[in-house]
Length: 294
Image 1 (cartoon, rainbow, N blue to C red):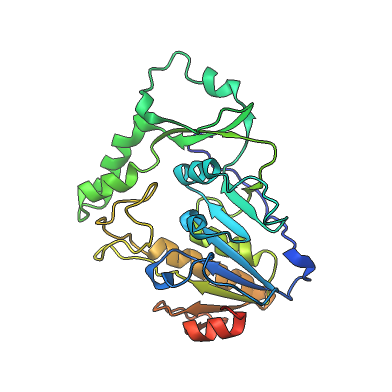
Image 2 (image 1 turned 60 degrees about the horizontal axis):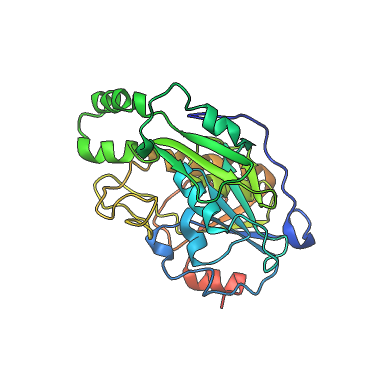
């Protein structure tokens, strides 16, 4: 739905490979530049109790067990690539988790534009037409007012930079879907960044250990930190970073919530600092040793 937010209880995930709850490990992979050495197509994890989670464009560099996307443009890119369809190569271990993903009859996509003069530049359709589709997006008619409010609240920010970020994914995204896809709608959390959504979902199956790679966050006084910046469905390479407070608070909420399940978290080659007792720092070499990454 447009600008929609769904609610729901936590999803119930069973660890793949028949591993009991609490007996597997999770590797959650962000797209910060500190993980530029790791690509799923190049590295092989020989510990078969490890479940991998990644987000957004990581699929371009190979498959992970669980791929998370919350931005409309990225969801459509992933779907159009064929990644979100069943593939015998991966068996039943590959799942895509998309936010606000509710297929409807394709006729609704045509009917919704009747009587409205919406420029074609605001309508993004996937390549292949099918009987069902997912409709999502941001209302372009209210964008300028939202930008004005944001600037009034943050007069110290660069207006052109702020406008560029707020205009991302504006418009209507119509993604036509097939019956044999592997997409699961995200029930909870809603409204979080893709990386921290992946982190929370990974914890819902109660792994004993969670390894966090490439969660560099960002800051407004430095360039955007993302290995895919400047590519499709990402901001330009020269964009400024974001205020990290929201991401930081989401991570802290995960650490505190899942401390009740005795989950230990390991930040890999990270400069982030948390006061939670279940969060520790390790190096890339220790990660490779523990998860048998070759």
